[in-house]
View 1: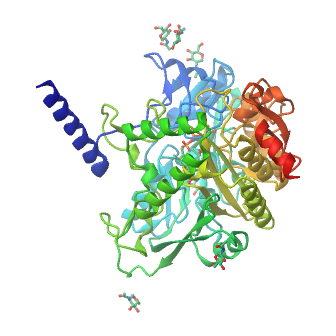
View 2: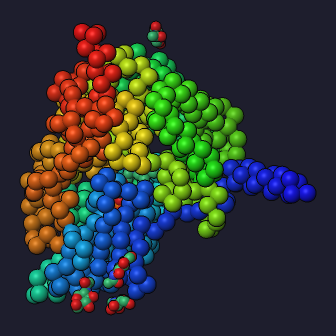
Length: 592
Ligand SMILES: Cc1cc2nc3c(=O)[nH]c(=O)nc-3n(C[C@H](O)[C@H](O)[C@H](O)COP(=O)(O)OP(=O)(O)OC[C@H]3O[C@@H](n4cnc5c(N)ncnc54)[C@H](O)[C@@H]3O)c2cc1C
Ligand SMILES: *[C@@H]1O[C@H](CO)[C@@H](O)[C@H](O)[C@H]1NC(C)=O
Ligand SMILES: *[C@@H]1O[C@H](CO)[C@@H](O)[C@H](O)[C@H]1NC(C)=O
Ligand SMILES: *[C@@H]1O[C@H](CO)[C@@H](O)[C@H](O)[C@H]1NC(C)=O
Ligand SMILES: *[C@@H]1O[C@H](CO)[C@@H](O)[C@H](O)[C@H]1NC(C)=O
Ligand SMILES: *[C@@H]1O[C@H](CO)[C@@H](O)[C@H](O)[C@H]1NC(C)=O
Ligand SMILES: *[C@@H]1O[C@H](CO)[C@@H](O)[C@H](O)[C@H]1NC(C)=O
């Protein structure tokens, strides 16, 4: 009797899982990153992963929710009159570093959650003016309704316009002005603090001819609150996507021509499998038949049971140093994704083969895990911190085209030394390589480059060393320091920002605009001052700090000596200092 009930409930559970997988409707949307007492005071703020690089939680005295520019101005004025520190927060707070934290505990958060209106669409002039809290998803779908398109965008549509501009977010293209959304900004209104004679707040109305726009369009949130943005669009168009997988022997050469050949080219690299997946993606005439859709599988509502099982498996593989298990897992994951075309369908329902052709707005970006009513956590976004799901470090930097081949070949040399070392990042669908172009934004890219996105296991215990810790650290330091990589402002661990500002020739111009817009630094914090090179202390030196990327090790105690991980030189990049396991150390010595 009991057994029968149990079986019935198990079957029901299974059907729900299948139903959920197919329809994705039983999802739980992401949590609000801001939590306050009932009257919006006494708040804490975190990011969409529920975890900053240093694992701290930030505080703020209150959160304000302006609904119009007028309200925004009076709120900034009120805080400026109080000499309160401020920061802009967004609906989901996707950036990994502590950009959202106001200085100290008495600061004010200004949320753009309710600044979410599309204000104007000029069909003739092909522009759209939006409030800064509008999401990328809204921009893409509204543009399409008027047969317009924002051609190059990030691949995740939950970002807000204010937030994605804040960190210089991008898609992938070497064509035209390139893939940064900031390249399409032709107007921007920003609210800054001001003196009493101006009522403590001021609106700057910037157009393309104002040089200050080069500071405001990628601002790290330190200039003030972007209120409205006008984007240059173009006519709606269709794209044709085909994925082709090859071995990675000639990857270093291929990357240089591939981005010239295809407008929306990107590459996903599986270095331990020694494969690279090329996205052949070009414009096609609008009358080409096809109604393709890209609903990227890793951005869908995912069964929390599956996520928990996946995480447990990787925890065990890490604990037992099961490199082989990780490699088998990586082949299974990448194989499954390839077999399901990563979430591409030819008509919104079925994948019947490449090429997938359709309107750009249906292919450029996705993120259906944001949808749906609250449920009981049957599904969620894979990285939702309320469930046992993904928990990772993300290292993301762009390397100039002039040296990118050497970087790729150095990584390949590391794989030759430790063939199984990078299976762990293949479990996260490999290294995503995207094209970015030199920008007029003072904090935008300084040369044409490839942006590498590397996602890898993070332990719940900050003092736990990871499998092939040293190889991941060496790649990170090689990219950032040997090849001068520019860190993505919205991703990375603390060490990613060491010396970063020194890589921007226009940093001085940016700082002058900051001095002009916010001379008291009310929108600045300890973190942004460190990133902008105004104060020391980007790294946090303490026991185990290198494991979390809070520092580069200089002593064994910065690694995990009790687990056998000691601070040693890199293997290919000798200037790197990485946490190496004793066994590996003796193995590599005996090789020499
Ligand atoms: C799943 C996922 C996928 C991603 N995909 C991509 C991708 O494809 N390409 C890419 O380049 N990046 C990508 N990112 C990174 C992302 O683009 C950046 O982290 C982006 O800054 C986050 O936008 P947000 O709206 O969540 O803003 P937040 O992270 O909340 O804010 C970012 C910064 O902008 C400031 N800010 C926000 N709004 C305003 C405003 N109105 N005025 C002034 N300052 C403001 C904030 O204070 C903060 O300093 C991805 C992130 C995630 C989580
Ligand atoms: C918010 O609530 C707390 C405790 O209930 C109270 O002390 C405080 O004055 C309130 N703040 C505002 C702005 O109403
Ligand atoms: C603020 O919130 C924390 C917990 O969220 C609580 O411990 C603390 O007492 C609160 N402080 C005030 C002044 O309400
Ligand atoms: C400014 O200070 C006043 C009085 O202390 C307070 O009521 C108000 O909430 C503060 N405003 C902001 C935006 O901090
Ligand atoms: C802002 O600047 C634009 C471009 O110069 C102009 O068309 C617009 O009228 C200005 N808006 C306001 C409110 O001044
Ligand atoms: C990689 O593929 C090329 C052809 O595209 C082939 O010539 C080469 O031998 C392959 N290398 C390996 C290691 O398989
Ligand atoms: C698309 O339009 C072009 C010119 O407008 C025409 O030459 C071509 O045959 C059309 N193609 C299809 C598939 O209808």
